[in-house]
Length: 144
Image (cartoon, rainbow, N blue to C red; front, top):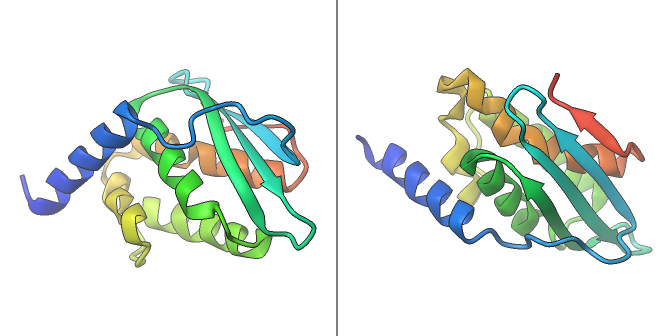
């Protein structure tokens, strides 16, 4: 096992056991549910966006595999304080990272090898799709 694989496993386990921002938000300005019907991952992402289009708070709840929960948790940490444009840009960049394109995204780089496991890519990007749907005014999204 190389250092990248080990870091990936340690980070996934940590964020799965102790997810950050894992709660239903009261009075969100945006929210959407993301569902992967093939594996059962099911998360709702909540955002509170201020009048300057900045994300003041972000959280998620639901259930799923360790990869999807860790990705959602890391996503919530990365989005807080970002503008909506920055959040959308980060969504697209993370999708590219998860599908094999190199990017420098700090802690999110632990997902840079997920493309090697195609069945896990949908797990890694599910909450991100829910966030993007929420910002687009859609209430649900699916990986299928």
